[in-house]
Image (cartoon, rainbow, N blue to C red):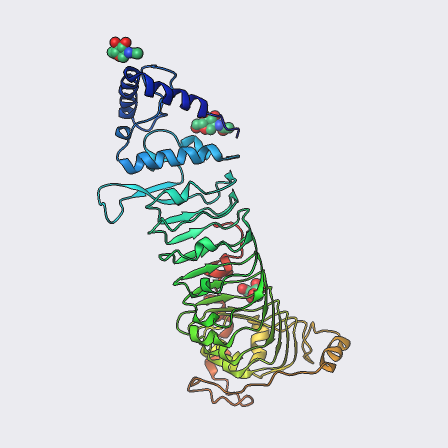
Length: 444
Ligand SMILES: *[C@@H]1O[C@H](CO)[C@@H](O)[C@H](O)[C@H]1NC(C)=O
Ligand SMILES: *[C@@H]1O[C@H](CO)[C@@H](O)[C@H](O)[C@H]1NC(C)=O
Ligand SMILES: *[C@@H]1O[C@H](CO)[C@@H](O)[C@H](O)[C@H]1NC(C)=O
């Protein structure tokens, strides 16, 4: 969309207004009539002057909407594309009716509806900057802009005391982490995924009082902060970046808060920490496609809420513990992915899970299992020194039927009779998880 330069007309108008008061009176009358018709373009009904007169505050439902109108019109002129013709609705004296804008009255001023939420998801608008736009709408509480072509520096948003959801995902932002997100005290939802942010993420963002933090699919590279576990975040995705270093054992401090975490496809290394097993409310733990090594600590048997446990494509080895496989029976485990590692055996309880498709151990080194690595790959791997200890401490009480011995399994009749059907019934699609849905570019 080509932008018509209205500035010259505007200047002309201002000029007239300053030197000939009579015209300005006629103009304001003209606009007043237009306003009565509501929602149409701001050209006045009686063709007075050039037809491009500036709207007056009295034309709008309230002063806040008048101010918002001016900000939106200014932003509209900075747009360099609008393939869906969204902005054709951005005319007239009722900005609350513009496509993408939603109004509500701020708490301190009950009868003054103003722009409270912006939802540009999927609008495919192009603008070189959001400065002068969202930072100028003081009552803005939500800004969602998935799948646009916005870029530039994220403006200073500290003048927006109510902003609690900020989503600039799948845009063209790049450069260092946008530090203007750090001081936002009311923020609970921050979605920066699918941009080209790079460098390191300030550790303080993990300590903010967020429920949701999506940083996936950027170019961040740094060791995970050691105090990651102090984060109050419930839904965390760091997937598809260049995070390095070990998974911090401080993670156990998040035991009562962390519901879903995606570390998938980074460069995390080191042994799997015992403390992961303490994440008792986590339904998703996904550290697939990293450089992690060592055996699976038996503490993982305490992941009583886990439904999706993905450790595929790492350098894990040893025996797949019975106590962990038993989570499919006594816990919530639906999908246990260990393919592409170097495991050499599986617990007795694990075999039925392989058959029912819950446990994936393809491309390991397990004798008697189909689709394993060629022997030479296994030999080459096991020639290298191993340094991760096997932790067999189980920091929770297991199910009454389960005595924790890695070899004695007592499959109860219901387990044999039902498992396949029961699991199929309760199995959830990836899209039903908050974090896995964040791995798709577009917000549906
Ligand atoms: C302003 O409006 C009045 C009444 O409608 C009219 O008599 C006058 O000529 C107008 N002035 C200008 C400058 O158009
Ligand atoms: C955009 O929408 C306006 C108003 O609905 C219409 O007049 C105009 O032709 C549309 N332009 C394009 C390019 O679709
Ligand atoms: C199980 O998890 C793996 C790894 O996350 C995923 O690729 C696969 O699609 C999942 N299977 C089901 C049935 O959800």
